[in-house]
Every structure is written in C-alpha cells, then in structure tokens.
Image (tube, rainbow, N blue to C red; front, side, top):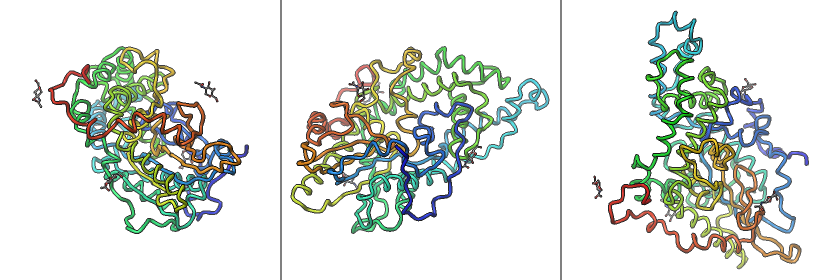
Length: 461
Ligand SMILES: *[C@@H]1O[C@H](CO)[C@@H](O)[C@H](O)[C@H]1NC(C)=O
Ligand SMILES: *[C@@H]1O[C@H](CO)[C@@H](O)[C@H](O)[C@H]1NC(C)=O
Ligand SMILES: *[C@@H]1O[C@H](CO)[C@@H](O)[C@H](O)[C@H]1NC(C)=O
Ligand SMILES: *[C@@H]1O[C@H](CO)[C@@H](O)[C@H](O)[C@H]1NC(C)=O
C-alpha cells in the first residue's frame, strides 16, 4: 500500500525539515536507549517527518467504525542533557584537556580529537527541550491529526495536560502549535494544564520514593553490571583509546561519553567524535546498562514501579467510560481529545502495569548474553516523543456483527496487539474484563502507602 502523508491540507509553515537526517551515528544509534531519536522507531520519518508510513492504511478500521475519543500520552521531545550529565561531561573533557597535547596526538588520536571538541553544553540547559524537541512535537501533532481527521476537526475540544517540567510544558505548547489554530481549548482557555498527580505519579508515591528511588540497594543489579566483565571490557577499550589509566575512568564517565554521542546526534544531527570511542558491541553493552536501570526503576523490577501508575490507568478508563456513556445516550462527547505530556518514567510503568514488553526472565547483571533478544528495550519503547494512544470507536453493529464499542492502542504510531486476544482491536468490554483486577483493586493511595514496618531490604519489596 502506498504510504499516505499528513499535511496536504495543513499550513506549510512547518515543512522546514524535509531534509534527511543522518541515518546512523556509525551504527550506534539503535542502542541509545531512552536517548534515542524518535526516527529510530519510525525510520520513514527521516525522509519525510509528516509521512504516516506504509502501515497507515493497515491501521484503518472498517468504514462502519467511527472514533469517539483519543487519549494520547506523550513523552516530551528531544531534550538537552541534565545538569548532572553536563557536569560529568565537563569533568571528563577537562581531564582530556590536561594531557600533554603533543604526546597525546600521536599515540591517541581519539583523545586529541576530543580535546579539540568544543564543550558547548552549559549547566543551565538542564534537561530543557531542544529545538529538535519542538519539531518532534509539531510533526507528531500533524501526523496524528492526519491519521484521525474526524477527531482533530476544527472546533473539537482539546484537553491538554502536562507534567510541571519545563520540557513537558514546552512540548505541550509545540504539539498545540502543530495542530494549528482551529481546535478549541475548552471553556477555561488554559493552554496547558499542569497535572503532576497524573504525569509524575512516581514522585508522589511515598513507597516508590523510599524503597526504589532513594534506596541504593534497589539498584543492585545496575551497580553490579557497572562492575561486571562486560562493562570492564568497554572501560578498558575506552581507557586505551584515550591513553588514560583505566583507574581514572568508571562506568559513569564512560556512560557520559556514550550519552554525549547520542545527544549530539539527537540535538545537532551530527556524528560527534565521542561516538568514535565505541564499537557496536560496546554500544549493546551500554544499551543494556540503560535498560537495566529502566527495568529496575520503572519497569518489572519491582511491582511498586508499575502499581504507582494505577492513578493514570484508572483515569484513562474513567474517561473511556464517560465517552461510552455519552455515546449511548446520544450526547456529544465532552472530551474527544485528551493529550497529556509526561516522561519516559510516565509511560514505562503504565506499559508494565498493562503487561507489555515483559520478558520471561528478569534483566540481571549476569544474564546480558541471554537477554540479547529481550522485549524490554527502552529505545524501542520510549524514545524521545514516544506516544501511547488509546482510541475508542463506535461501530455499527449491523455491519460488523461485533460489539458496538471497540478500542485500539498505538505505541509510537504503530498498532499494538492486545494480550488477551493477540489482535490489534478489542471490544471495550473485553479490554475492561482483562484488566478487571487492576481496575477494581489497584488504588494509588493504598499502593503507595509506606509499609508500617521499617523495610529497607529489597527482597521484601
Ligand atoms: C542531518 O545530517 C545529515 C548527514 O550529515 C544531512 O544529510 C541532513 O541534511 C541533516 N538533516 C538536517 C535536518 O539538518
Ligand atoms: C489531575 O487529574 C486528576 C484526574 O483526572 C484530577 O482528579 C485532578 O483534580 C487533576 N489535578 C489538577 C491539579 O488539575
Ligand atoms: C500473534 O499474531 C501474530 C500475527 O498475527 C503471530 O505471528 C503470532 O504468533 C501470534 N502470537 C501468539 C502468542 O499467538
Ligand atoms: C529504618 O531503619 C533504618 C536502619 O535501621 C533507620 O536508619 C531509619 O531511620 C528507619 N526508618 C524509620 C522510618 O523508622
């Protein structure tokens, strides 16, 4: 089927970036984990950021179904490194600058290249949205509008909420701009409404904060991998390329060098000299380190990671319920479009709660090789501008002989298969039935209460 393309009917202001992006940074860009560009999961966007890809036609429903409500949960777009990462990069760079230049240049061309590299990141950039991040959001908005023209039609009501973080608010505003001026924002006229209870539930979950976030022991698998044989090999290679004693390096510094390679590609579209320190094998090891952290802090590692997202899960179903009721009583749908901007840390726990990307075996420090083909790869799940979309449809019963209300889920604009059916569409009733236990028994307040007994040992988590 011929790829369809968004934007034919839209203003041409954002047609700026039709120039192809670098396809890879020396073959490493598939391993950047949560620092991956959105184009890694949708490579067709490199050539045309408004293309819906070849799969667009296949995701269309029979003509007898009409979308009633769309709920999009977004991760903010491409961002700058955090202040901590910038500080560590500054330290590493300063260490390379202190070396005697003449001796270094001959024996260690990599070190000389990096010493000549301009350290342009300032701590004040601290995780803010990069210009590329604005474009990520504007383009995503236009593609979604093209995919669901009826829902994004003029004067439909859009509810736009965001985490309080600057990069999310800016992403929300960019998404809004991408839609153009025709959508109404509802009666309150607030452009982006902040809701951290929904978008940063992890911060407000006392049990998660005490037992995972602030508990070093909870990251024991991550810390063990940093000291393990795979990372040791990477460390030795990097130390040798930089002509530094291996004692002067550690996993965190090597990770910062790798992150810089990923940031330079995502933010500036350049293959930076930092990338030359790593082979594809090294990149796989560093990707695993990133995935391990996501797994234990945001994924299946501990139940509280995903249980803390119940508040968001229930909110999604409350709005779906409401839309179904309004439809049944032939009322207009009060919230046809709900767009909420958060973090990788917002999406990952929710996907885990719903059982997606779960491997048979947990990710551990000692099973790197066995996890080569793991499902849990953060870069495929939550790259920059990651988006999880729930679409509720009303279907004409006579023509489909199916139930009236149906749901689809798209992750990063690709249909997901539901666990209960292995199909990409489910009746709303079956979906609710499958998640009955979570809907009835998972309550944020109870889940997140700190246990009365003083638990610090992680095996009790
Ligand atoms: C990104 O870099 C590639 C390769 O250098 C170049 O062809 C392309 O035009 C750049 N894209 C943008 C959007 O600047
Ligand atoms: C956030 O969303 C929840 C669930 O919809 C709602 O109960 C709460 O009032 C909202 N908070 C703010 C500050 O808008
Ligand atoms: C799910 O469906 C896909 C294609 O429709 C098939 O390849 C796969 O084996 C199925 N998985 C299960 C668990 O049935
Ligand atoms: C829990 O125990 C640890 C170590 O025994 C102690 O330092 C901490 O203050 C205790 N916390 C509470 C809330 O009692």
